[in-house]
Amino acid sequence: MPDAIAVEALHKRYGDVQALDGLDLTVEQGAVMGLLGPNGAGKTTVVRILATLLRPDSGSVRVCGVDALREPERVRPLIGLTGQYAAVDEKLTGFENLRMLARLARRGRTESRDRADELLAEFGLADAAGRLVRTYSGGMRRRLDLAAGLIARPEVIFLDEPTTGLDPRSRTAIWKVVADLSAAGTTVLLTTQYLEEADRLAHTVVVVDHGTVIGRGTPQELKDRVGGERLEVRLQDAGQYERAERVIRGVVGDGPCSHDDEGRISVAVAGGAMLMPELARELHAAQVVVADLAVRRPTLDDAFFALTEPGEGSISGADPAPAPPEAEHVTAVTAGRTDQR
Image (cartoon, rainbow, N blue to C red):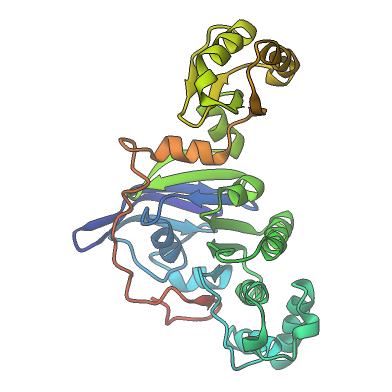
């Protein structure tokens, strides 16, 4: 069974800026892949190429086994796209938006109405179906936008930062939708600036910077590369650092301790939770006043910063690639369309 997405040696340049530089990417059918990277790393360029909205300078792109560069018209009925901003018509109702997009996807009148009703119910918008979209909240608009991308029942859907600007409740609702899509067999490529989102949803994570892949693996694999547990002590008085370090070394051994000017001490440990009671007792006995004591495990944020730190591909070095001519505010109903190139 071929991968749902297979990209090899993808290059794209905007003037003097190399947006993609030999990028390789594969996504298994039914999987969720999180595509991460600093601003300007090339994530949206990848999505636009996969969605047949933009042509690369070189490389190969296959979606569901179809060559997306040679036969984009065959790819479009297979995919859906939700961009970084909701792209629904505020002057129409939620129902009218979805019905119109279904008709553009060459569905019959009855099928278009039924599909619109089905998606409105699925996304918790049935009660707002007859309201103008301009009265919708931001979270409701994002859900409607995502529903629009599913009009044609795509096998692959591209979600380009789908939860940007949403409150935690709305973001959680979108997360459930993405998880349900994957469980139903839809392949999802997700770009996001929220690393917690990728950690929660993605089966595989790919980190890109300066247009090339600099890390890939499951979220846990990427976190494991950063290191194991760290025991962190925050002192009430940073002047007690030397005394606290002696106590910590006496309990956890002679591993390297790091500290900052605000009284935080960090040391790598194994079985940190078992060491905490003894360490708390010894610190108290040494009259070291502790504001906080915790065991911290690596997060995807830690892995991201380790991969994109200066010298590896700086997170502050986002390339200034100009926006492509086509606006990014787009929800693609791709079935049957030939005007998206």
